[in-house]
Length: 247
Length: 247
Image (cartoon, rainbow over all chains, first blue to last red; front, side, top):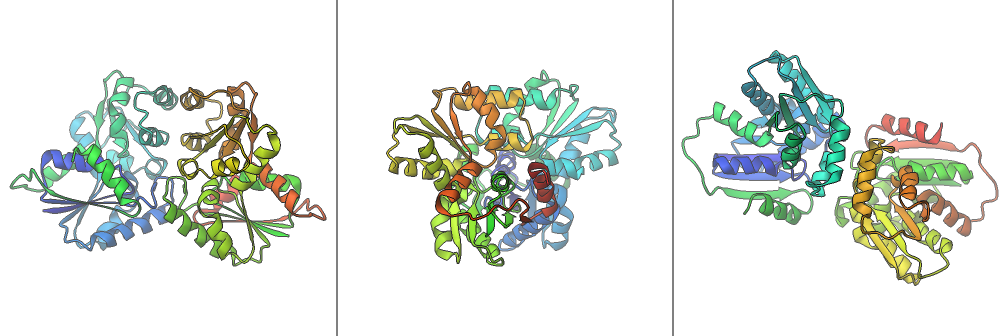
């Protein structure tokens, strides 16, 4: 199978990392809309328009499935993309909500969603978790985590004080959904803040779990073909991909 | 006179604030490219393309002068805009560098430029200051200040720890150029960090000083016509304008 992976920027490479670890696909085509990143601060109509542009891009390739690795796009544009696409489309929000449900048996579990402003405002995760009967769900827009990851301030007082700012009124959650593809890079620090007592839900792992539950993968592909595209500065994206994915 | 003010987003309203305080213009037309903000992380070709798009927008109005309130655009696209424009174009970088020169008599003064990554990489301020014979100039990309201002974390440990991170190896400067239109909103905190010993250069005030040195303004306009446009969500921009400009 040939899969497309779409993100507004480079963050979706964390989903590609999971796909590679599980050796699910013969060919992976990644497209980051780096000229227009970030989507998380834009309004619904703009996000929709950009998402349909990306769909047109993927129509150039003979893919069987498109993974929307961007939480913001998954929250706002997934239905419209599905209607317009000649291939299957899955998003990290439905996969993440389902992974959370599978990890938490008790519908009284205390679940915290972290995301960009647009993802949090969409209430997409909450609506799905509510349909699974979870009642104890809250969401926080932790926008500063994005530039902190981009500046690689993993081990910094800046990250620590930013977590204290965002989490000051938060009880230790049973599960934390990392609702932005940048956040897995600071998952150790977020987990440690809550004394490693919370189950962290990671988009890449959630997508793999979701696909394995839906599709019968007959064989493994230890060395898939990889193609990377970007709407701006593809060399920078390829450099990050090399580093993150150990290529 | 009728003036246009262009910025990638809402930050340029701090320049409009200075124009209003000094009552220079009969009519002010503001355009923020909010659908494609921020420019500071994009590459030169994209910044150039977006800037020329904005020029086309302003051609719809009979303006006499365009102020480029965005440091990134001023650093990368000013010459190209000037060549293509049927009106005068001035940018905050040349105005800021000149204001710095006028404030600092001694060319040995220690000058610190703060900006986005794109503005700092352009070396636009450094090149101008170097042409004025200043030798003791350094620049810092303080990207995290942008979301800190957008989240209004003015009085926060997050801002304090971020300043400690960026400024840890910095000697108290004689002058600090606030090379991003967001930064005037945290100028009191930046000034206090250096015990109020540095002269801060603010783009809006620098533009006013620059224009008053070039143009003979015959009369004052205490109640100019104001028009605000945005490429996305103009109502949000108008709401911020109302708040910042006390309209």
